[in-house]
Length: 318
Image 1 (cartoon, helix red, strand yellow):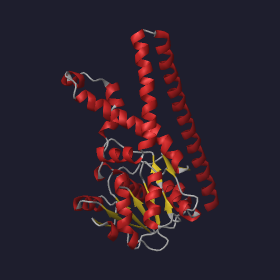
Image 2: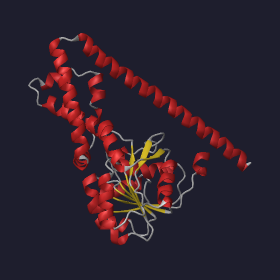
Image 3: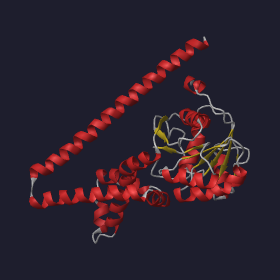
Image 4: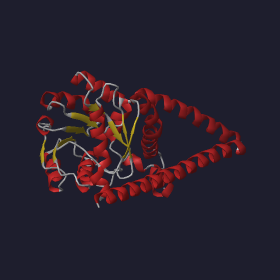
């Protein structure tokens, strides 16, 4: 694959702390797309470490993060949000000079603060957030195509080295991802609305209905729409608990907006206002349909650009 050959990176040893879905998929994608360096991994359970080795995702593993990062050029923290600070404290004394530290968490302001407090500066810290996942977690759910065509947002500080940003960008691109850079606080506000809120809703709806007096009938007669809408409620509860608590202010604000909107919709239903209700539903449909069209258009353009770049690369090699 010529796209892989065009991507330049310097990391010959990558350490992945947390070899669950996100971390193991990162390793699997790197391997599948030609990464020939050394990958060490860390997980809380020895069984997980062994499984990651059996699947070929890591070369060596440990249940101790400090051991896994020794000699690494780059460290990816793929652990729950509320475990990032403790993990940084554990690995800080063992990081090689110039080692780049990145992560895959869903809240970026907290990561920058934790890294600043623990490491003392943010020169080699590049927070990241891959907008990809599955409803299932764990090393056996890892997928080498998980990041293909998906967006990864990086939120470096103004003091972060350009070389560190370029290195993290190159590795995510090697995984097949698209990379964009945002300011951390802006990222956290946007993701509170587009990612954190939907997960809170899905978890809340399923939890509420699980306590319904007609619980058995509710779930027995659930249709495809219910299953599609609540799919993300099968996500890791600990991870999403940590995300909500780490981003509590933006999540709280968007929940307040939603509750006000739901109360308005409730009033329209109780008043029998068909026209106003249809207007809300129509606007929602039009908005979502346009987003789907835009996504497909952007994806097609990106694929065309990659084919063109590959063609140019082929001509140069000839």
